[in-house]
Each structure stands twice: as structure tokens, then as C-alpha cells.
Image (cartoon, rainbow, N blue to C red; front, side, top):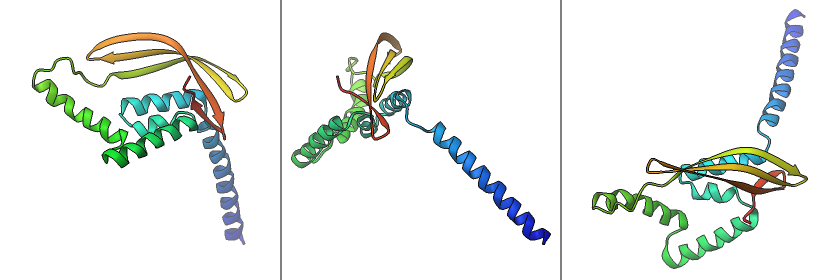
Length: 156
């Protein structure tokens, strides 16, 4: 009898831990404008074009897919392929004396403030680009829309 009782207690405790822990994960992973901006920043810095495009509103994604399909049909290459080829050429161009070609600029987006109005958000940001060791800073706003529970950058 004691074994059955202890198994039930363990099962109940595990159930509570899973429910509470899972609820915490859902809260920690919920979509926010800032998370979308950081996801875009990471995708850019890692040269992940598909992931960058996924951060934009669905109509931008659809346009990209159309262009990508057309390029693939006519050239046999996607925009991602073209970008990867360009990145691969940079070291060779530098080695043969073309100093004007540098590395892909690294980007840091500091989100200063986010104002949410229903399904729309305006993020005040500070953009820092680092190109060949030189930093350039600018500030501005990014606009986002919440669609089906996810926040997307708007192409304004």
C-alpha cells in the first residue's frame, strides 16, 4: 500500500513540476517585438538570409519567395546562393589587391524602448554597424505588427 501511495505522490509531484515548468517556458518563450529584432540581428550577423526574411511581415516573405523562385528558375541560384558566393569571393578579392572590398559589416541593434498599441509596435533603436573595425552609430525606429501571435518587422 505504501508503494502505491508513494508512486501516486511522485506522479502528482512530477505532474505539477511539468505543468508549472512548462508554463514558465511558455512565458519565457513568448513572442515580443524585442525578440523579433534580436532574431533579425542574429540572422544578419550569421549571414542567414532565409532567417532574416522570416523576421519580416508575410507579404515581404512572399515577395522574397517569388524572387527566389524566379532566380532559381532562370539562373539556377537563389538569393542565398548569390550571397554565399559573394561572401566566398571577398577573401580572394582582398588577396589580389582590391582593398575596397571588406568584410560583411557586423550589426548591433540596441532596443531602447518599445511602445505597443494593439497589434502594432514601434521600437526606438540604436543601430551600430562595425565595418573593418570602424563603428558607425545611428538611431531610429523599427515598426512591427503582430500576426497570428508572432511579431514581424514591417517594411516601411
